[in-house]
Image 1 (cartoon, rainbow, N blue to C red):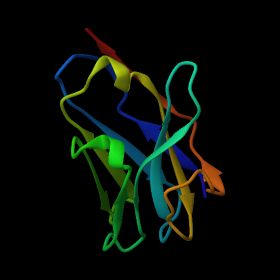
Image 2 (image 1 turned 180 degrees about the horizontal axis):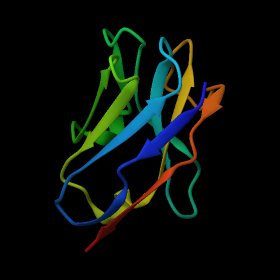
Image 3 (image 1 turned 45 degrees about the vertical axis):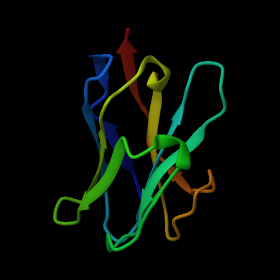
Length: 117
């Protein structure tokens, strides 16, 4: 499966962005991860192929929400109340099983999110 991430950009502190990850084929679990400057890549949120189960990193404190539109093979990450520490490259990844880890077989190219203070 091929993944195309989009929706990144520059936003002010407190603003919102919605990222999109479009898969080339259906029926994959999709997760969002990010890599902040000088930090390791980290899991943020994941959703099963059916959309019935969603998983989040505890650190997000309810600011991010994952959803999917299977008619479009697209998974979204709605990010609210963005802070400068959210500045990172955001990646989507796919696997048959969704976990709160980095163990995904397929990765998209990443999209840059920059939050200005």
